[in-house]
Image (cartoon, rainbow over all chains, first blue to last red; front, side):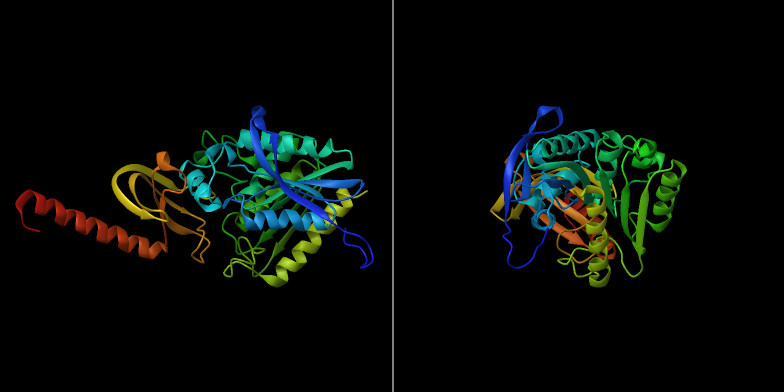
Amino acid sequence: MPGTTDQYEGMIAETIRIPGHNGDRIHAYYAHPIGPGPFPSVVWLHHFPGWDEWSKETARKLAYHGYATLAPDLYCRDGHGAPEDMAARVRANGGVPDAQVVGDAAACRDFLRSQPNSNGKVGVTGTCSGGRHAVLAASCAPGYNALIDFWGGGVVVRPEDLTAMRPVAPVDYTKDLDCPILGIFGNDDRAPTPEQVDIHEAELKKHGKTYEFHRYDGAGHGFFYYDRPQAYRAEQAVDGWRKVLDFFQRNLGN
Amino acid sequence: MCTNIVERTNVSGGGRGAQGWFTLAEVSVSYDHPFHVQLEHALNIDFTNEAAGVGARVAVELTLESAKELARALKAAVDRADQYEATGYA
């Protein structure tokens, strides 16, 4: 948590290897504050473009705000190279299996919770495909304390669009979700569309879940991405970050 | 991956990537988030040789309209090439 200018602050941000789904050794980027804690934690699931600079930068941002953040390389099993080349390979192969992502995220959650300076609370979040993956992770492997879905496309899916890797629409797992969810969406987005967000919200309401959805006018997909000028919306992004940090503080804070 | 729109096929030929020329083995054509062009979705073409490493890739990201024009031009050139091979005249 940022303190006053006379207080020490520091973090360690590094690549580590942990046993992920099925015990596979996978890489993860671990950005965490230095100190005795206790610190809350976040599992940060990267977006479709991969385990890239923006994803790691965001992990460090969360660490700056006091969250021990672990971001697994969800494409680790597909090889190694430039993040864009890896994402292109995974794109060509139709993505990564949902069950594998759920397992990798759960492994990260358990790693974070087992750290001696953890406060025992772990959230899960991600943007784009990572938002969808976060919804899946929290629904299929209960045990998180907070979930944030940043414009995850493919949460609501037509039956004909299901695949072997994505056999169930994440929205159909809503009844199993056991933590509060914050949703950040742009009203000009097409994945998810506002109508799909409505369906997700109705399902959360139907099952009595605790949720907050924030929908921004004048924003589409990926409006936090300052390195994507066509997508970035500064005003909405600044407000969105405030809501994100407030939500995590309320649900993960000491 | 976000749209799930991807088509793959094997190809024979060569491509020039970041490390120079290499033998092409596959091509994937997707309509999804691009890396470079400032669009939410683009028609992405990746010529690759997976056996040669993940960096063996020639990438193209096109607007949907220009992809349609490319498809038209490709079809026209292929039709003329077929005629040339069959008759000696294009």
